[in-house]
Amino acid sequence: MANKVKSKIKSARIITASKGMRDILPADQPFWQKIRDEAHEIAGIYNFKRIDTPILESADLFERPLGEASEVVQKQMFVLSTKGGDRLALRPEGTAGIARAYIQHGLSHLGQPLKLFYIGPMFRYERPQAGRARQFHQAGFEIFTSEDDPIYDAQIVLACLRTLEAMKIKNLHIHVNSIGCRTCRPVYRKKLVDYYKGKKVCADCVSRLKINPLRVLDCKDEICQPIIKEAPIFVDSLCHTCRKHLRAALEYMEELALPYVLNHHLVRGFDYYNRTVFEIFAEGYEGALAAGGRYDYLVEMLGGRATSAVGGAIGIERAIEVMKIQNVNLSSRTRPKVFFVHIGDLAKKRGLTIMEQLIAGGIDVIESLGKESLKSQLKVADKHSSPLSLIFGQQEAFEGSIIIRDMKTGAQETVPLKKMIEAIKRKLR
Image (cartoon, rainbow, N blue to C red; front, side, top):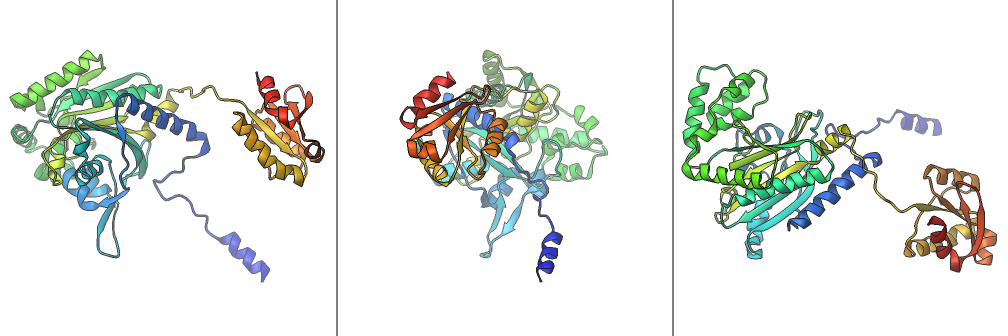
């Protein structure tokens, strides 16, 4: 019987992470912590307040503002039905959920401009590849205002850029464009459709030209790339107000000495965008590290009052990939950690209190309480490069003392527990 059980255990299938879902292992945690720390730091400097929205939202929240022709709605949303018949979606992006929260909780009462910041996971049914996964993470900035002042466009770009710079990513440059408003966009749309007539494009672009022609400019298919390069540019079709808005936004960026270029064929993949759109790249890396733009119609589209807004988000996985490519040094000053060694059950039990005293005294401590022998514990101490080991055995427990061992020289000193913290700090200095 026992042999049958063992056979079943051996033949059990090993369960791995779902396709496109990745574990963040200890070796990568310093990169993630760096990004979290810097994003929070930049958010504080520029007065953005933290907001967290649910991972699951009504599917309709994304289907309407993102647009039927968007890649996300057509192919990439994870949609599920509850037992009660509700259609929910794992959020594919952060802005729509924040706009929903802005309306639902009446956040306009907090005053305007209202600056919000978020960081968390998003989900899209992507084909897993470099820089893309089905669960990915973004850090984003959003500004809701009573006026569509282009200075806020520049502030969002600035917040995204400064965050990437704080991650020590070098050679960043910004692509900027305007995709107009409800007044001038139809004019450009007609020009674009007329230009594409008779041209051989991919199957997706055939559909896009019928539903939302602007999406053809976002196509990545090789057959469409030469056509996109010769397509009409949006700036030529902008109305006076949109042209003025773009000029002012660029002037603010110039005032800040931001490294931007005007990319006439840049569009964003969602329908809620209008006027200024942007993407931030690192030299030598293909994908955008950050992107966003203005979305003056989104709040109204979701049932709220007409509200001007602009936002941008940083792709955390992509930023980490570039940090690794550029060999970003994450070393920082950390306090050395002493290693606590116990010998015997009594010492093991008393050791918990001693370690709490060390922590309270400002001394970081590592332990391996599951190991019993002195030799095996000192090996662990070596692996952690601990400068000092604290050896606490039965005799020390009765005498109220502890042995401090220098891991480089092997020199040892026995001190009373009452003077332990003072002696350790002296040695660490």
